[in-house]
Length: 125
Image (cartoon, rainbow, N blue to C red):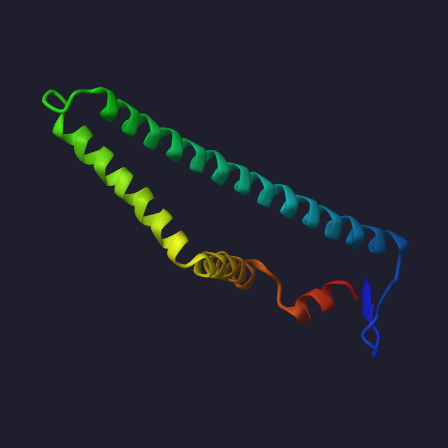
């Protein structure tokens, strides 16, 4: 049984309850870390696959002569080239905007996934 004393500290009635809470907190932290690591690696692999696919489309389109190149491949290659050209132009025009977007992404992730301060304090006392 866990008792909460007036000053906000927690006092356990047995040593094993304290150890159980410590292991539970440790397990939550470890599983959260590896879950996030797995999601990050999955996103990285997904991004690499998109880049590889785009590279294959552009390379195939550049090797096939225009008179015999299928319209769908020509359209896909042009769309892909335009997408990367627009992204590069935006980054060159406003490099601080790119950093701002990255910072906003971190901020949004923190707001979505992080525990509010009161929960963190409550968890560790």
